[in-house]
Image 1 (tube, rainbow, N blue to C red):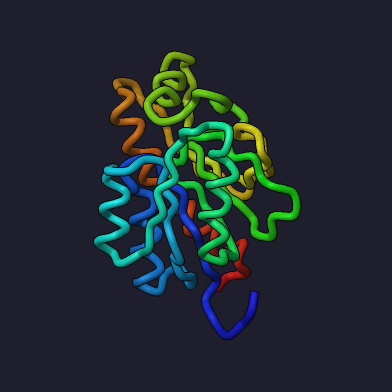
Image 2: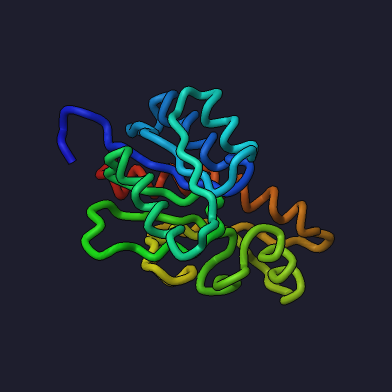
Length: 194
């Protein structure tokens, strides 16, 4: 990374883009000293695509089919934006990192990993599993992506109390509030406090 520009972040989305919007807002307010250089979406017509375009952020949609070239096409789209960092923000697909890919890749998961991670564990499924387990705490985990589901080195975690009467929806709201703080903080730390 050079010192004469903000680090370039590429955000990967598969849904509403609320995490992406938080990062856009934080970069534009100066709370996160980085630039959202582009967004790669796995579906056309999702709210996240509209949010990115409304914010003036370039978007590249890479549909999953044909599946055998999905990863290659995804990384071609990422590389078009010349990222210093790639962040997954509701990206629900396994990302196989090509050898020699120069940028770090981060993800945020809605539990305190390693608990409640792995294939198929995202969104409401995680919160339902936390409640079913009787866990007293949940939270979020920012971790590096290593080409498998939710196993990369952990950079930061934030916990929330699971209270009597919590539903998957109320627990999700608490975890999402923690995520809005944790992800920008972890990104800033990784980028050297910029």
